[in-house]
Length: 340
Picture 1 (cartoon, rainbow, N blue to C red):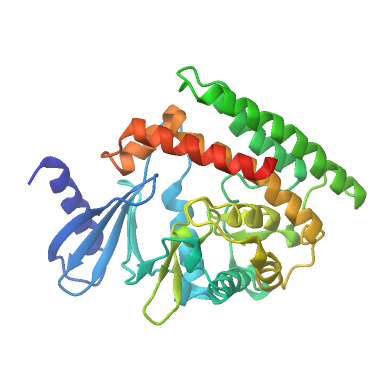
Picture 2: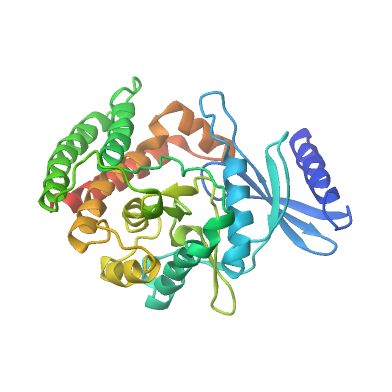
């Protein structure tokens, strides 16, 4: 048993010791899924767990463990059938122990049906039932936006970071330039739409207009159980946010794209408790378009040193040259969908 395996066994034993389960571990296997953290499947005498070891870096001060654990603690109360159970956490070692959810992953957008969209929408609605707000004390979501200026600034920052990369892939500069040009056009488009409804770019969402958002929400982070129920996972970016941002992200997920034919169905079911200007079809479609620029930037995150380090932390077996080519192709395809 090498040193890394010994370390994971020790961390797992420390966590299980905090629960009511016996300490006996049968086996531990790495799960190479996602690009941020380390995941391990734990076979235990009495049960099965997932150990999650969160990424920490001096350039990334986000408390991923705290955000996800707090959100899941809340979600376990109001939507227990749609979230994995939490067992315990270890702040010192940035680890947590969660329920292992048996089921299958959605691997293609062709698998998504209307009832899947309904379950996702209902999950958002349940998280945001007004009677929950009396005892909820969660932080803002990662990159939370509460005005149009916030949304534009968030995308601008991501684009600036890519433009400032010194060691560029030969195919990257032209792509980034094209992304910038399309972004400028879309920025003007959404600003004019806001103005046409009498709103300003700097207008801040009231507290009662904000929602609790899982962030990074989509069917790439979903497990379909044998009974057809869906359990959603990965909430390290979760917190208070603008519903328009959730929609913009939900319909731009690259791993498992969601057809826009489900837009009205999702919005009407997910935000039935919210009456917002944002939840206007014209505005929402404009948001989805400008958020496609954000997702072009997210796809190209691997060209940023701190994000690449996080990828290798989660999966040291990555082939970098292959990954760069794949991500550039994805970003080009996504951008083309805006130009057509």
